[in-house]
Length: 230
Image (tube, rainbow, N blue to C red):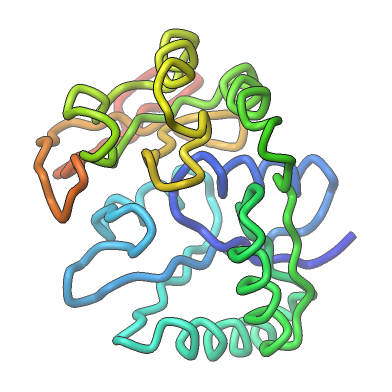
């Protein structure tokens, strides 16, 4: 059993990585997300920081936000080094699927911080459809928060990942898991969530070639009683 931090985007890949780590009885001590304090959003999926914090609260894990301030790699390494001292972690887990360049960069960053790099959802590319189906079958609820305008139209943004989504995404030229940036997700519920998130207000905007879900507000729903938590 290892003491682990999870590189956190708020999307399905990092969420599934966290789920698998917990299933394997590792001690996950925190989530770490690279953010832009200037834009008040995280880098990976453009989620507003207050919404990202609500998600971490729903999962009941500490969230450490790291402002890149133009030095993405150096900022991450410094933060991981600090987290290692603070929490005594052994490893940092990533939600990378099959992109070798991503894996090499993640391993480099982990090594610089004196940590082991873990890849709980690493697969062969041809297994992407099966992984998407597994994610949905586990009971995770996730929505598309970004869609590449070069590949997908605006109607994809805000869609829930379900059987219909699986069928439709396979009919496009996209990787079913969106590993090449075709789409990104925001997870609102699942087996590791203590509370469910409900998006109250959002808009779809076109930003830098991406149809993006601009989430303005969310609220907690108590999963036991389905009562709104204020």
